[in-house]
Image 1 (cartoon, one colour):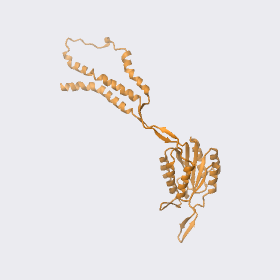
Image 2: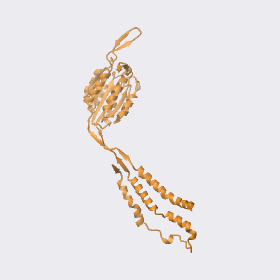
Image 3: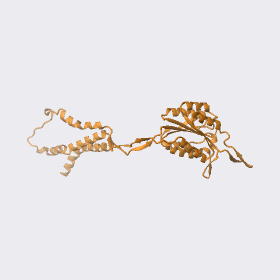
Image 4: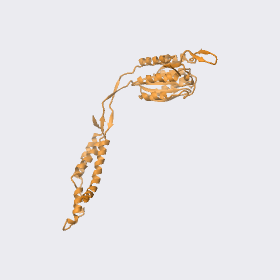
Length: 333
């Protein structure tokens, strides 16, 4: 469907007629005159004058003005309506990038990978499913920082999560500061529901804000926090003489993570392998379902360059043809 953004511009169509009707004509006395007994010496000039006053000029000028006014009215093409699901939820992911996330106690298929790599693969699928949510990404180590502000662009959030590197934010873990930053960013948002998913494999060892104090601030602002503890319970380590089974998650502070979730109305989850992590994200989909409230959007394409281009072509003809026709006529003669 064609729509004009500025339809009032069509009122300009009568402007040339108003100028012709009400503008005072040039006085005959002010016009130059030459009286001669014979017009034969001016036959060429008479021919040139007839070319300039040809019948083609008025229709071309009217077409030029019509196209120019049409371009000024900004014609637009409205595409088919597209329904966009909007949930009204602001969902922030806070991902631990401390040095311990390089521990290789997860498996993807037949390959052993570090914790961050497994998290990226599973979380990317979760992000792709969150249609209608505004998503954001916080990375934290010694200090937290916002990698992606709240946005509907799920592809960008995925891409920037994949680009996150171990040690990028330091080797320690500032859980409290990460929650505090999420509270600040989500408070600036406009979502009716605010959710933080915090993923870590350790305890709070850096930062200025204590995790439980940060949880109090989050609860006061209505922010629900789901915490996920990452890491296997047992892993074989080979040294020079023999193999030894160790607990790679000995530093995980499950007590604090559980308290943070309970204070804010969320839940604590434990991810010991990639399968459990995928199940946790599926459970989060159930606890925070994607709502299907629809918002209709119609793509708009601007069409004004077409009439504007044709108008410029007509204007060029009006200027150039009176100069070219006499030359063409003389060459034929």
